[in-house]
Image 1 (cartoon, rainbow, N blue to C red):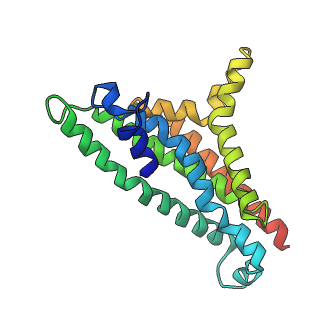
Image 2 (image 1 turned 90 degrees about the vertical axis):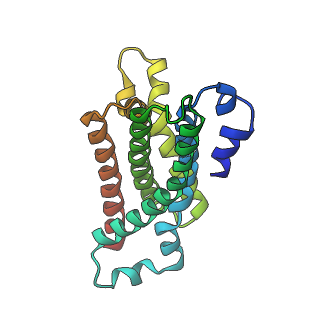
Length: 214
């Protein structure tokens, strides 16, 4: 909230809503994926790296809980924390509504679609962060790996598209699908992409932990 608030309301620049001169939250939805790219790996980096470092993973596995449920529990816990962090940003919507001329004049469809895009983006980021936490006992290393993988999937494929025109790599990146949802158009292809990516990294997490415990 502090980082977003400073860029949106205090610091002059392209993200400042007052400088833009119109009641719109597009700047927030451009900035939020980059903030979450660092926030979510920071939240999830301890999920399994701390368990492995402290030697409590084996103890956790002796409980009457399946490995699948352990992975899902860690995932849902981290995701709920991120959702709680996003809830206060709804005050931005109220502010934009009051700043509109006339009051209440704001793009409902685009805003709802953008929040939906942020939710699915957070789901994918969290799954990647949970997987990264299984790759090292060091939390900082897990954080760096998580940020790197999230960056590759969010921006890396768009970068590849600018280098190679033979193949459209945008389809494989999260940014294109997020921007599609942010336009207020709910396309099942975008939803399937995010759900598939989330499920893929949760499976990777399960397989990695199962291989270590056998």
